[in-house]
Image (cartoon, rainbow, N blue to C red; front, top):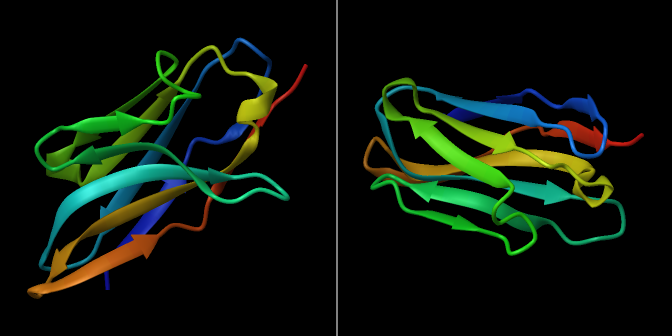
Amino acid sequence: QVQVVESGGGLVQPGGSLRLSCAASGSAFSILVMGWYRRTPGKERESVAIITNDGSTRYADSVKGRFTISRDSAKNTVYLQMNSLKTEDTAVYYCNAGGFQFSKSFATWGQGTQVTVSA
């Protein structure tokens, strides 16, 4: 079973920066896409940024120009650099990975990491 573990959340002031990391582990798997999602109380989970195995990226309009997703394929790790953070970025951020393991498709979620933007 492929697992992903997030790290890097915390408390930051508005205008500050944080970097989230997500590492995938398991055996005999290949990743096609990894992404970051977030959820705030009372709202639906939303896609923040995704990156495919060919390096293509896609961002939510609300984070374009502020957040950057990147990956280290050798480490099966994806990063989310968050700059110019706003209070409305406060949420639990979840990592998702999708691909194949033992020739079967998989999609897995991490436990989430809290990001709080507050003065």
